[in-house]
Image 1 (cartoon, rainbow, N blue to C red):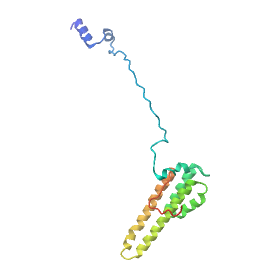
Image 2: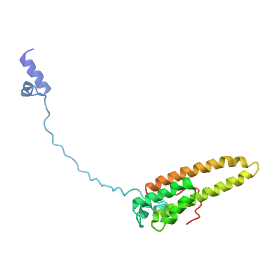
Image 3: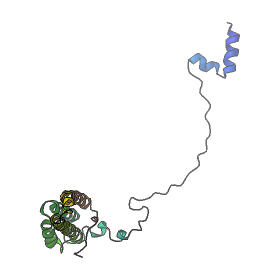
Image 4: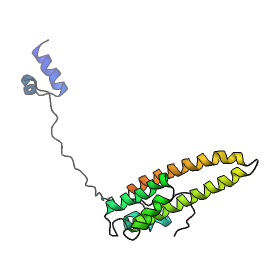
Length: 179
């Protein structure tokens, strides 16, 4: 190939002779690009969709640290009230609630909730015992005792974890005898 043919081929590619001789690749000319500015609104961590549930007025953040106890102690004693219910029935939560109800609104609320749940379980055990004494129905009591025990342990652990996170926990199917 002749030199004129190479120059013709390079000029067709749009490359500059000087750039080819230096061994560099051809770079496009700089472009002026206009960038449109966009306003971004920042949202805080506290902001979010409104919760219209009835408990949204009574949140745990409004109760934590409002008494004589710190927020950490509130969560600890609230957790303890739920956890003791799994091992001591209503006695453990009752003791925690009676001792700390004046010191913390959070412990007062969670202690009452744990005591109410344990009383509801005790009533369930009483019903299971009565059903166990009735002929033909007593065979259902055999399944009711373990079901009540499992429900008591599982819901107590859930309540314990929620209280440790600083959330108000409500047990399902609980008679609210202590208000």
